[in-house]
Image (cartoon, rainbow, N blue to C red; front, side):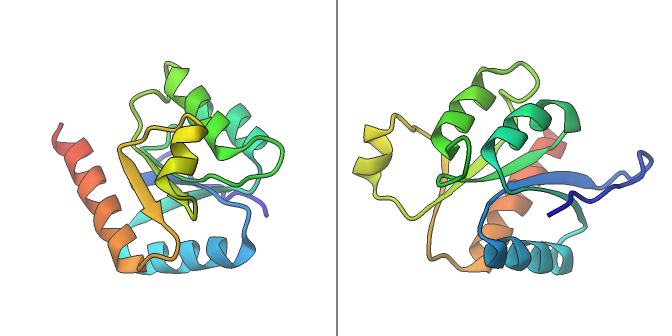
Amino acid sequence: MVAHVVEVSDKRKLIAIVEDDPQLVEMFHDMLSVFGDWRLHIFVDGQLAKDQLPEIGAQLILLDVGLPNLDGVSLYKILRGHNSTKNIPIIVITGSHDWELQRMGLKTGFLLRKPFHMQELISIISALLLQEREG
């Protein structure tokens, strides 16, 4: 999947989606396009996200745990250690249990478990981006 190219003058918030499941990517794209005025940048590979996320200026990241080439847990830790991404809200999307995430060393403030309701995700995104705008 190719990332969307957007003009620099576009003032909408940028959400990076790091997800390799084509059905979820399509669902995220469709729902977030309908229920919010956001730009979306899709990554289907953890390594590509690692290489490009620090440069794109996302205001929020949706991150799947199970990714090809670089898993979401490792990517989360890398992003938290990088100057340009360490303060960006990251919503981790997972089907894993708490004990599995702890065993992997993932401690996150924003966790969305599969299956989830899209309205729940939209509410979390809206609150985080509003909070970021006010902060």
